[in-house]
Image (cartoon, rainbow over all chains, first blue to last red):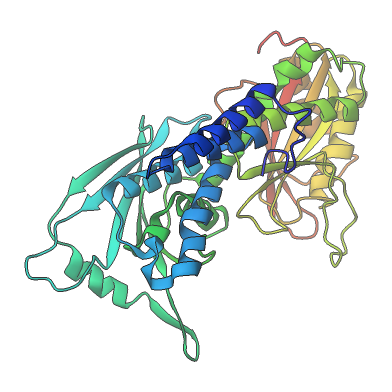
Length: 218
Length: 220
């Protein structure tokens, strides 16, 4: 983390300390049913006190909201729930944020994302889409825009791709791989339709993977 | 947290991400320089190490401002791993990326240069360029960078002096394979040059980016 891991209250920013104490008091005073906003305010005040970057904040929020939740509640976890288009949009924006700064110098190239969305065919019994797909394109004067593109039902095609993504690592130990397809100035990311696969921290990880795929020789 | 290495990739982008990364690092370096000069902590009479200490700090701050979280700068780390037989080198500024292996880095070597004296230019080659050629650092790498702190005269005069020395200096093993020329990749700073050299052990070609930074800052 970028900030001090153990801020000393005496030397910390008085405004940050004050904000933290106020957030805590507001939470204590609240008597309603849904204290989500108050907890969020307390979180943000703590982030500010520690001087955490936006990246650090995302890693913490996903760790608490998805990873720990999955470890505790397993198949009932929110981490395995289907993704909303809004969460996919956030994923796309965070992935582009990981790559885009490398193209700020000496280049007009930027990234643009298309999030493919489709309605399920009527009568389909499966509870959720098998995979989701996002296309990223390097284009002149693109600035990290992410748009939702409505397409025909892709489930049948994606199910066939998904079947090839299951791999046996050892006897009785299986993994479901994620797929990155590169083509000219575009790349596609295909992953299971689970929130943990398309979180903001997954986007940061995938941005690293895309860069690593191209820093070494073909 | 997402699983590391759970991905499988097919194909390759036509966009050169490696070049983009290096351009970004040089852009950070160039953008940091005015703060080094205006800080007055170091001047043209300061030692190379003193100047590089301040430059390193400014580069780090610039990197943070740009939220380049995955790029890291280290000041004077050792270049080689324990099992490698090549001579030990201390890299002035080592650039690494989150997704790189331990042996992958981008080395920046810093030297003073002068438009009026050939002595610093000789040191620039003998104690700078040659270290990349002998693989004191950046063994087997395709790219590296040299920074020339211009202590008098202008960057272009220093560039001409270095260019002449590259073509005439016979005393050192520069193994030059591509002559000194203006760098065609880097557009936002006019005083970036390039020379290619064959490394002695790996026999690989390393392309050196030469960035000239002046204390007079006339052209910044």
